[in-house]
Image 1 (spheres, rainbow, N blue to C red):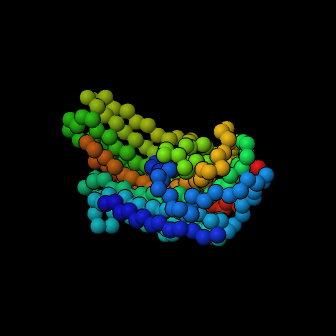
Image 2 (cartoon, rainbow, N blue to C red; image 1 turned 30 degrees about the vertical axis):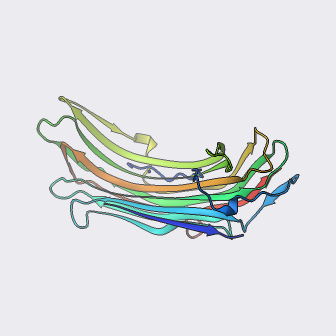
Image 3 (tube, rainbow, N blue to C red; image 1 turned 135 degrees about the vertical axis):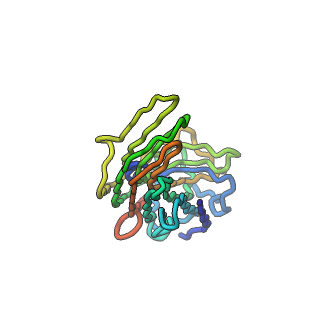
Length: 289
């Protein structure tokens, strides 16, 4: 079962244990509001701080696979957001699940993201863009891997048990006047953790893989600051419209999933707080000089 909620607003002036990674990512939306189409007179230096002007889009998605009425859950505890007044954004979610007595699969996950567009004024020459801010994320992940029972003559067969959480924030500089706005990566910050126990069989040959020391269960937290820097390689054109695009995404969930196997005694749970109680990301300033 998949549910998707999309929201558009104009602002004023991924599963074994994957831990949350923060990302600002940029995606091009071909038709941006006219508010981003205005140009500003040349300036030697501009410093943007909240409140920002611009636009944003939002998407919240849940994916649940049930083998029983209450075998899995994926809940968005805070929809993804970006506040142009404060420059703060984030999201919050939790998922859990377990196999049924008959060894059937279950899974639950969420994926939330926002795309934010902030106009950038025209500057002569090859200015440098600095995007400064902070981020913080906390959560918890648990996984009981149980065991897998191979059924007769399946080809191929697999049994995947995992839990994860990740989040990221990316930043890009765009020339929105171009028919195909060009991407220039300004920078990104990312955090990821994954714990998994996977089994695979094909034509009588079987193998197992695990995240081992790379996976971490229990509580997790990550916080810090970022400073994305990009020097524009091509001169800006006074008649073009430019924008900084931020793409923030958070994804978490788990699965006890099998094909050609029975998966028994498996359960998972994960939470990710990237948007409440001081968690989330804040874009404190955008400097162009």
